[in-house]
Amino acid sequence: MAPVPDGEGPRSAPEYEVPVDEIKRRKRDQRRLNDSTRQLDEWERYRALVDASDEAYELVDIANREARFALILMGALNAVPLVASSRADTVAALSAVEQYVMAGLFMGYAVLVLTFVLRAIEALKPGRFRPHLAGWPANAIDIPAGVRYYEDVVQRSPTEYWAAWQNVRLSQLNAELAVQVHSLALKNDAKHVALRQLYSGLRVMALTLAALIALFVVLAWT
Image 1 (cartoon, one colour):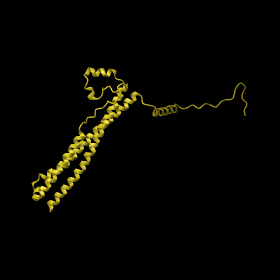
Image 2 (image 1 turned 135 degrees about the horizontal axis):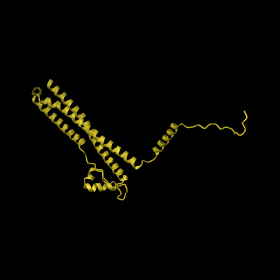
Image 3 (image 1 turned 90 degrees about the vertical axis):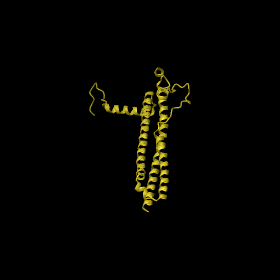
Image 4 (image 1 turned 60 degrees about the vertical axis):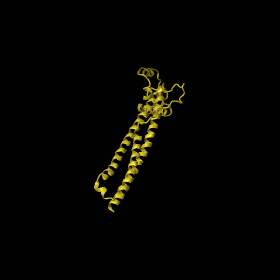
């Protein structure tokens, strides 16, 4: 071992310097770990509720488009018997008894069509799902102030409505948003139940129409 010069102690190993990128990555990972366990603050909760409200309105719009598409399909299905019944030579191919039988069957089909047109109207109608706040504690600091939902807004004059905004707290706004999202969820649920029934009816209509056409062809051929 080489002697240490006079006046000098033993040299320590050089310290390892952590790169700046590694420090930033560790801080970012720690922040993500903290974010995964902490509660949302009021502004984060507000943004999340607004996103949920936008998504609920988008689902309402999708349901309306699906109902309109079902009406288009229904119109295409109903065009077939209308065209067939308007041709005199087609009807003349049947005997008088067969004409009465087919007329009765097509009247039953018309009742079926009317039933599912009403289902389509049920799926397209706006619906009334006003938030119910009867169970909300009257002395709660986060009780909704009624500044967002249109039925609450129109009950005030413009000056009263503006005055209500002067005193509203963020917790009240978040509570009102949560209640509104809940009412939109009820509306979407009702629309999707009506849509499922409507598309099931379309399947029944298509099968019924196919059976009627097949019966008509058999009667006309024989």
